[in-house]
Image 1 (spheres, rainbow, N blue to C red):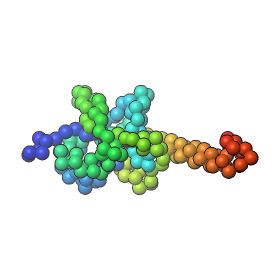
Image 2 (image 1 turned 30 degrees about the horizontal axis):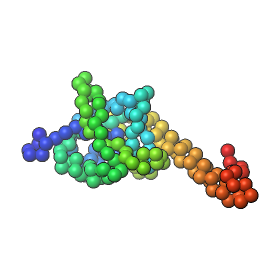
Image 3 (image 1 turned 90 degrees about the horizontal axis):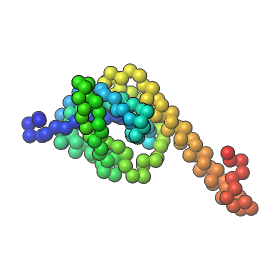
Image 4 (image 1 turned 180 degrees about the vertical axis):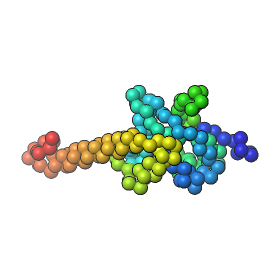
Length: 177
């Protein structure tokens, strides 16, 4: 406990891994260690999110935050509309288990896959390095997957539009795969 502002564990997997950014958002936050989120896969929906995946592991940062930090993060993360809070079971570096709070995407954005901006990705990459994760493969994989899904969605939308623009063949998309 820090003074009269109680603390809690928070786990970040996106831009909140970046120590410089967290210092601005939550000056009282204390970085604890890098950890792995087992059973969670990093995905991009223009911003970072995680989804359950039994075969995945995702780099993350463990923080000790105050209630005032939590309120600041709630505002930054768009809680409860864009993100909701979940307790994730994690293994701590000392071998013990804990259930820190994490933000997980909520509502209609859950399926809104899309690539993140270069600046946002750079911020996460800095956060990876801040917590000792030199391998950026999970970050690259999430961005590559988002690009692929966005292209597929765009192609499907174009085909749907073409199908309805051919009045002699309603529902038929000529030239679409």
